[in-house]
Length: 241
Image (cartoon, rainbow, N blue to C red):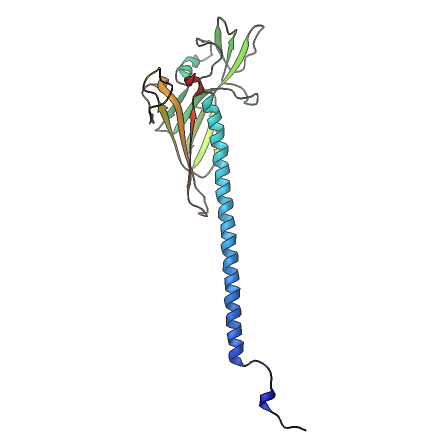
């Protein structure tokens, strides 16, 4: 039997094992950090995309309605036969921003056929007469019906809400997590100008309004991304013709 020769032994010593464990731990921690960073990035991107989608939905809807503000049919002179006699005032000021209560009021032609019951209906023969009635009204032979809606948008308690109808209609939530909502108007220098010369939150003469600028700031309740502010400008088509 040969005697034991230490030089022929194979294996790892304690120091080698500790070094290997330390290196393995560093690699695992690095992979974990990369995974966590990638996950946080994905979560942040999804949160930002959700905020952008909410803003796109609300602002595109409002832009479409703002562009139709002041469109009351084919004749300029309309007889007010509404039950409350409230059509004339809305016709004179079809767009208004109350900075104190943060409410935007729009009087606009109903877009499409799915807008529900209109606030008023203007019946006109497009030649000699036009009359506004409360609610839905069917035209007779030789008449056209123009459904008109009064929309009230308001900002309160971190929510943007909308209601339809006269007075102070009941409102439903359009979007949550709103930290700011602001409206300013592009105002022309004179009635003959079609372009706005400046912006004002409270124009003295509503007839000089040519466009509306909306600013909406959304926040993430979980603080995954910073607040995002979205700005759009919509022209009042019926004031530019």
